[in-house]
Length: 193
Image 1 (cartoon, rainbow, N blue to C red):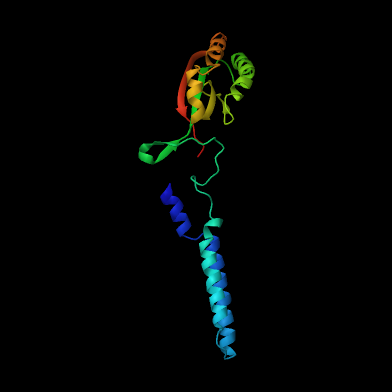
Image 2 (image 1 turned 90 degrees about the vertical axis):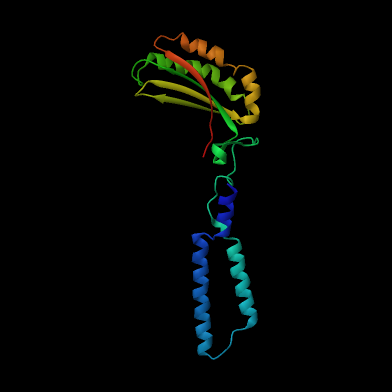
């Protein structure tokens, strides 16, 4: 990511090029007006214009969109763990609880019962970490229900050691719901990009 941040700071943004072109047009207009009047350009004006253009080019990256490495993170930062030969990295880990439910997504009694179990355990999940995010995914076509709890890497170890509490109690309750099947878990990285 250092190569992308250095390349964005080496090359001015489109806005900077527009400003540069505009100032050059004004300079040409100024020069031709003064040449018509048979005056020479003042060296002080030339130096001030050059200083302005250098400053403009140097600050061009301020107008460029932030790349991934420059974006402020919503996560508590841990040392990023590289993946894919450095092409990716992660510092957040997710524990996914998933199952299949029965019925139409709009009227499914098993999905309604799952929702009540989620409501029961959500406050406990929200207390896991200052950087926790909890996402609910429901697919009406393949009848998947997923609850994804993502924490910063620094907080994942202690949660894993606790058995991902309240995972055991949550899974026990949804397994007892009529129409719920294929109850599974998975640990996976989860990064916003």
